[in-house]
Image 1: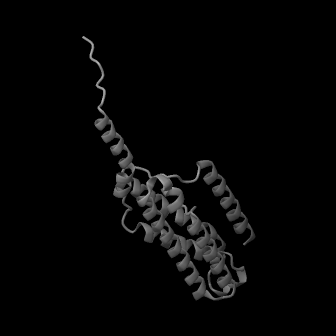
Image 2: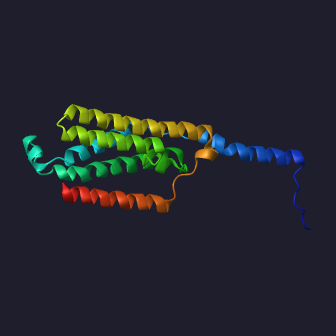
Image 3: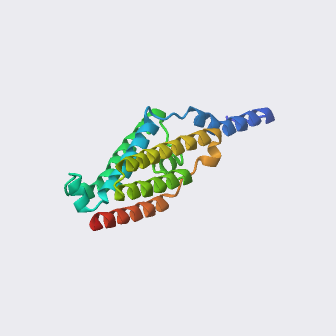
Length: 195
């Protein structure tokens, strides 16, 4: 005996479609960030900015500050520290939520959003300028401001994602991120070689 498939009524089909449309918004509302997520990302960026500014200093200036010859390697240590914090936080996010959120890694963690990118570049330039002028307190201030702005832009993206997941669920393509990482690595290598 062969059974015929059940054909849903119009009201049943409508209910299934409503549930399917509501699913992304329901999931987005339940997404949580691990404790200290934004604070740790902001601190990691602030340390990276400060490390780059100090690492770019002249060897004579560094000797005067008693930083020795290891300071150019701060240019590498800053991004390495950031990568460690970012990796741990991404792992914690996945463990807490059980899912990946499209755009989260690129926009929030890697700062590919406009606000994070601009704030990072401005803070890095300000910190380097302040360090070259021996305004160390200002270099520290620029670093903290850059880290804070980076963290706030990530928090803002999460808020916007929760409000409209369909519009904010896409990040940059993997090929674009690999290209940017390669360019950053080449720039980092040039900075270390010329420092």
